[in-house]
Amino acid sequence: MRKVEMDVYRLHDSILNHWNVTANRLLEQGVDRNARYEDETTPVMWAARAQNVEMVRRLIELGADLQAEDSFGLVAFDHAAIAGEFRMGAYTAASVEIMKLLEENGGHRQ
Image 1 (tube, rainbow, N blue to C red):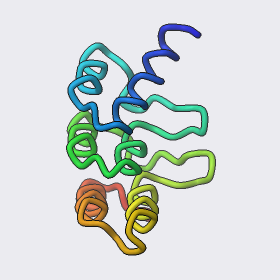
Image 2: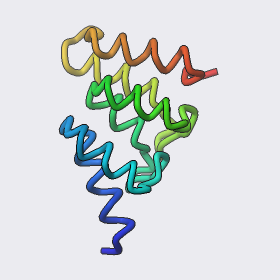
Image 3: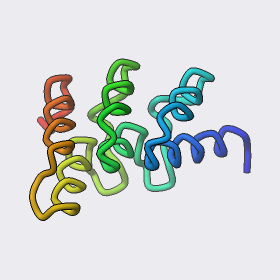
Image 4: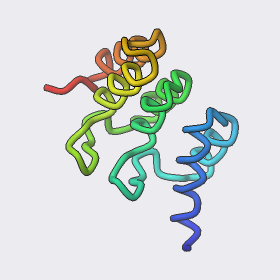
C-alpha cells in the first residue's frame, strides 16, 4: 500500500473513531481534506456518519467539498441523516447539529 493510500486509511479510521487529534495532525501534514476512500466517500462524509461534530466543523473550516457524492450518489448531509436515524430510530442531537452545520455551509442537497 502506498503512503498516500495509507494516510487516507489512517484519516478515515481516526475520524470514524473520534481520534480527532490524530485526524487533525494528518490534515495538517497534508492529507487531502477531500480524499476519496474505496466507496468514494470523503472525510466530511465519514465525520457525518460517525456523528463527529468537531471534525465536521474542522473540515468545513478547511474547505471540504460538501457537495461531493459517494458511489451511491449520497452527500455528507445524507450520511448525517442516515447515521442519526440508524442509531436511534430518530435523528440524534449530533445528527441534527451536523445537518444544520452542513446546510448553513452549502452542504444541503440542492
